[in-house]
Length: 81
Image 1 (cartoon, rainbow, N blue to C red):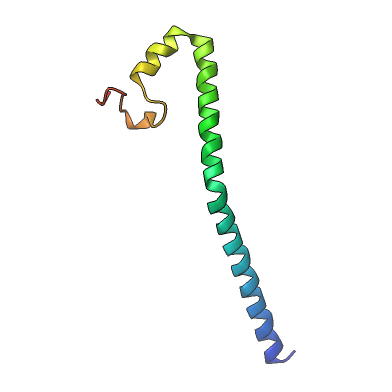
Image 2 (tube, rainbow, N blue to C red):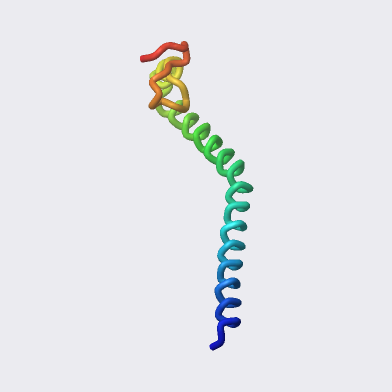
């Protein structure tokens, strides 16, 4: 094999790698809003099922705690726990 054909082979692999990387990145950015929407919808649906199962106990809990970012420790009233 001569030097020219091996250089073309290497460059073709680099171009294929970059094309796959760029396409996967573009697809990721296009899918991100859909994934966020589906997650928010799932969270709302789960909250409705918990509300139906636990009733007033969950209502009292939901008045104090936020839906997301429970790890931060903030309550809906603006204070910290």
